[in-house]
Image (cartoon, rainbow, N blue to C red; front, side, top):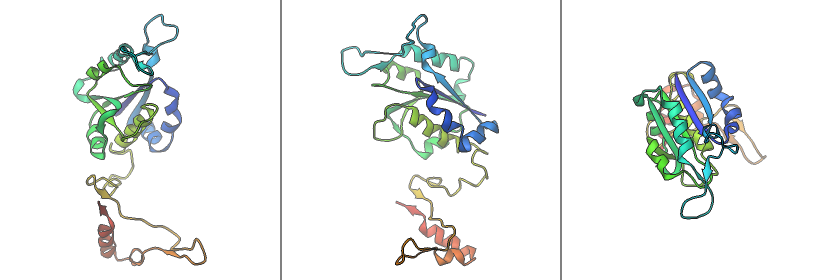
Length: 225
């Protein structure tokens, strides 16, 4: 079983999404386990506000997530784990651009810990506690919760049994290389007329029953651009 640990200050964000679709089924089948950890539970003892952020030294706008509660959270999650079977990932716009190859690589680990940032980011010393930094794109989000969901789903899909049929991912977009885009697919009706002067037809080759010709058509329609 692959364990996903998500550390966040907004634990309720994930509940609905992870209770749906293939991720729900994968958890019920004990292929994966998703655990959400509230960072505030690792705030300094006696702090009634459960503070996990503070103003940046040197001045500047916003607040920074403190290193101490993150250290405590990671220590609690990793104390009984073998280092070679786990990966600690900081979700940050400063990180490496995430790709399908990363999802395949990370699916080999048994424990994946995802740090969700907020506000103006992390105390820079948090970088000493992680194995890598990952970004899902060149844009800014309010926090790392959406990227954490992206990584969890894309990694989980690579785990045998999660998607379903063992060949389900063979011809999926990006399954062969980062430029591969899956061929177009069609279903009923054979002819769709959105307006009186328009008719959108299914390509005749797909109706031919000739599997060799269909295979060749699909190969040509697959894009590598």
